[in-house]
Length: 279
Image (tube, rainbow, N blue to C red; front, side, top):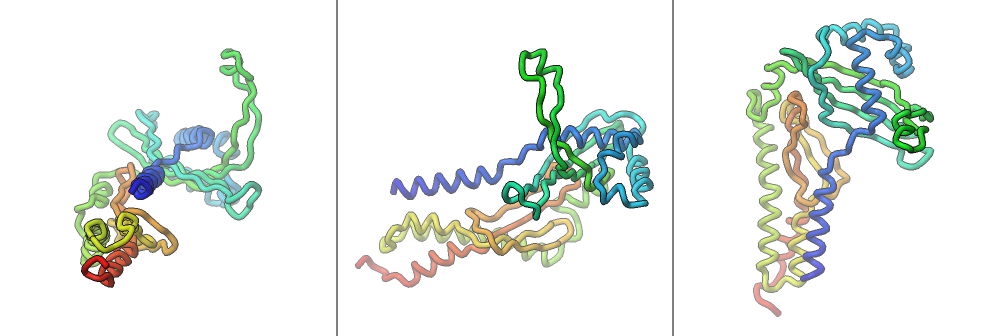
């Protein structure tokens, strides 16, 4: 009993840890805000050194950045909010297959207008700089900062129609949406039924372990609720693998997901094959 409870608590801890949002790398965030500010001010002394070779070598990049700048008002923003960030890193030190990239998602607020700015930066190295603030605080004034270049940037006005289109009850939902929503509801329901059945069984040995196993799902199937796009992550083991999430951006769609309730099915099959009375 004690081991089963400990396992349940450990599972809940893993679920909560998975929900923790990765904080933005400070140097990437600092570079991102400076880069976006340079777009608004049309400051190529800042933009040029910060561009990745792929963007800098594109002959159309000047026209592209002029189009981005045209979406910004002339006045400085009233508010800048980093709403989310994600980072990909090499699998091991020195690995070249995966570059260290950080995607930063901002909401820029202006008088009567808001913009969603998505920026992807790639780490290119690091350098040692002198920080006078550290010197005044009596600390080592030299610190190491990470260097980044911009890989991609998009600027999207946040209009009322776009926000409405990403609402959960927006029009345009068809039979596929309804079927997926039903699957999202049935997956946890089956898990709960299997767990309760295992806990109430008088003939099932180690029933608390079986009850915990009822909440194990295999794989993950997700749907972009706005577009109807469906994706599958086949290699994944989840506890309570279902839910609906929406990003902090007003333009973010709802993402619904569920896991195949293999644990619940295993429990129900096991209960079906047991004798009705204790041996």
